[in-house]
Length: 113
Length: 111
Image (cartoon, rainbow over all chains, first blue to last red; front, side, top):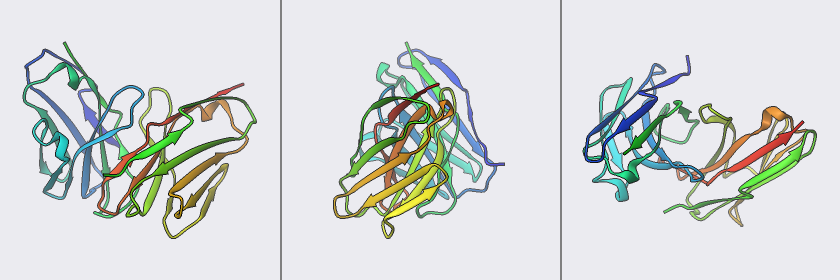
């Protein structure tokens, strides 16, 4: 099974409220990623886990948090949503730590009102 | 950091035509270049890749060319079909497990 699952698929949130997105994979992949995708833009890397080590991008360091309680699950947490957070959030996983093919989930579409 | 540019941003062709999608990157440390495709309403899917020690890779109707000197890639799709309609993304990886994507090329193949 090469499926990455994301929940919820659609999320409506009010400005200032928290948002938690969940991702799971059953491929025993070491590395899990979160990307933010806005219409007509490139997917933007937010953070990734290699095993239990979290790497966050410098420009999104304070905006997004994440946890990986076990190898299969990874969450993306926004403490206080702003309008600019409206986007598709893509989870992906990869075996190993080096280069390789990413397996993507279908995405969680977040709309902040 | 790495920047990846793709051109054109959109293409409309008739079924059976060939298309060329160009991609350039800036970081000479990038060593791995996977391409992904996103069909309407579906997840991104890997379609082809190339490493920096190669110049060409072909799989079925896809040919990927790589020029390390100019930091340029091009994806050639032959005999296009309506099912090829999708957004195609070029990406670059510097072996640190961080993939940087281009903005995508929206391909529409008319029957």
